[in-house]
Structures are given as C-alpha cells and as structure tokens.
Amino acid sequence: MNSSSPMSTPATQFSPSPMGDACRPNPTPTVELTPAACVRLSDALKRWTGVTIEPDKTYLFRGRLRDFMLRRQLITLDKLLDRCDLDREVRERVVDLLTTHETLFFRDGHPFETVADKLIPERLAADSSVIRIHCLACSTGQEPYSLAMRLKEKLTDVMLRRIDIQASDISHGTIAQARQGEFLEHELRRGLSPMQRKRFFESVAAEPTSGRARLIGEVRGMVKFGVMNLIGLANSPPPAPLDICFCRNVLIYFDGETRQQVLRGLSKWLRPGGVLILGSSEMLRDQEGLFRTETIGMTAIHRRI
Image (tube, rainbow, N blue to C red; front, side):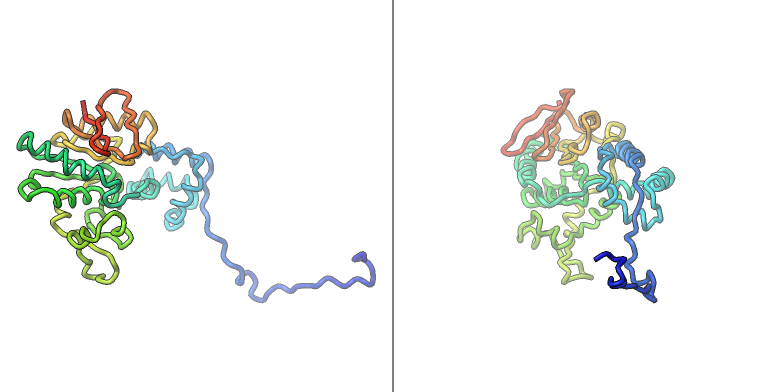
C-alpha cells in the first residue's frame, strides 16, 4: 500500500533523548598520518638508526606511535617529526617505539656453547690477554646475561677474570632495563632451565610473590652496558679490538648499503681473526671480503680477515 494512502500508518516519531549526545560513546581519539609524513618518518628513521621501514607501513606507524602522540598532544605525524628535530628525548622515544626489541635467554642455544666450549678456550690457551666480547643490539640484556651465565657454568674464577663482556643497544630505555637485570615471569620462562633460575636469580624483595626476579650481583657485574648506534661503528672503535662480537638478528632490518656499512664498522672493531656471530637464519652478504665464514658444530662464525 502506498505510504500516501489515507489508510497508511503514520511513521513513528522519535523524540531526542534528554541526555542528548551524552549517551553516545566518545569517538576513539585518532592521529593524522599522511602519505607524505610517512615518507618523512621512514627517511628520518633510516637516517637516525639505519633501520628501513617502508613508508606504506602506515598501520605499523599508527599502532606504535598513536598513544605517545596523543599523550604529547601531537595529533599529526608532521608535528611529531617537527618535535623530534627539536627534542632529543622525543626522538629517542620514537626510536624506542619503532625498533624491534624481541629477545630471550639462550636464543638458539648453540652459539653460547660454541663460545664457551671452543672460542674462549682457544683464546685462553693462545696468550694471557683479556678476552673482549661485545653484544650489539642487546635489547633488555638477555643475550649478554646468557653468555655470562654460560661462562660462569663452564669456566673457573681465574679464567673469568680474563673475560670482559660489554653490551649495547640504540635504545636508552632498554639499556636502563638491562642494567637493572630484572625480569618478569614470562621472560624467565623463555630459555632458562629450572636449575639456572635457582642458581642465578633471586626474587625482588618488594614483590616476592610477583614472579619478578633479579639476576644475582655476580652475573650482573660481569656485563657492562652502554648506548650504541650501529651506523656509527666505523667512527667509534673500542679502546681495544674485540675477540668476539655478537650482532644477531639485526642486519635483517637494514638495506644492502647500510648492512655493508655496518659490516665495515664491525671489521674495524674486531682484531684480525676475531669472530662475528650473526643470527642463526642470517646470511652474511659481505660484498667486500671482510670476513671468512667457518662452521663449528651448528654455529656459523665469521672471522675477520
């Protein structure tokens, strides 16, 4: 029946709620990321860190930066980048949020066995010098602390006095966490045996039932932490050449040119014959013949030529 018919039922009329818009949920706060601003951020991140994130990864930029931008009342990506140019702390926080910090204790297992069972004994037998080890891109410290625990399990106290372990990351925040040597229950479950947890960790006194635990002082004291940008390696060599350098699961985030720049820097950090250890699934891709690859058990090592 046509609605204009006198027999038709009048349309129901709805009166506005006396509460008005107050009953409606508040819209989710949002931030503006234009394609041009994403290109600008991608370029800036590569310039700051060497890390390549393609500018079309808008979802990643938004997901990682949105809350920080809203807290700072920076509702456009361009405003955030303008602030980064003026404020180093803001820039460092943006780097923290956009770089990957995935890590766990004894990741892959065999590299730590190779160092403790083969490489360190070789160096101990060769001469009486200090054996210098550096873990680059160490995040919250699980890798260097894993190495320290394994060496403490394998070596005598006299041998340990000849070991110098240093570790670094570009993130000021993760280095601060690493120095604390405190870990949550889910972090402790990733890679540690019950015996290692019992021997090397103690409950945090203020939170005895939280599952949070701190490495004992003997292990924390074996590792010295600092902030380091991988793209600046060539311009900041260590006081003495390294014997062993861990640079695991990092080069995959760089393009070919930046990767070779980092390898060039690493070759300056290592003594001749010094060992570079990459992630288990990483290819060296050294285009300048700076390293010679060998295999010890399951571990690929790359000796500086």
